[in-house]
Length: 100
Image 1 (tube, rainbow, N blue to C red):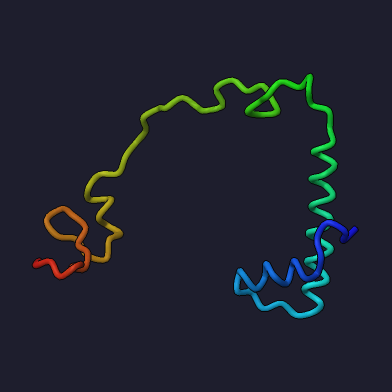
Image 2: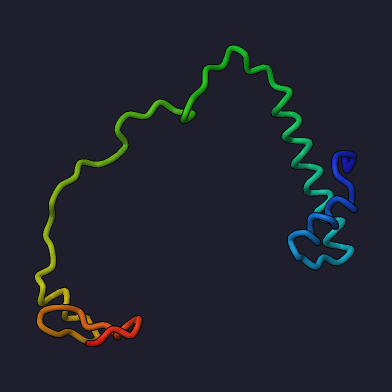
């Protein structure tokens, strides 16, 4: 099963990613990556010549709901939960050294 990727390959990739893996993790990840590569090989072997390209496996028609306007908050209701408000607006801390 681990013929596609070696333990040294996994250790090299881990080093490139600056990951510190112990011996148990190297063995685990080597087996997992080998299984992934085996599965990819199985998928690659499928004969898909007669299968048309698709963007989605199911036929979908307008899955979005209609855009219906609804009730909105009044400015007073929106500001009611604000820690600070001033002149009908949210008051936030000054940033980037801007003068208030």
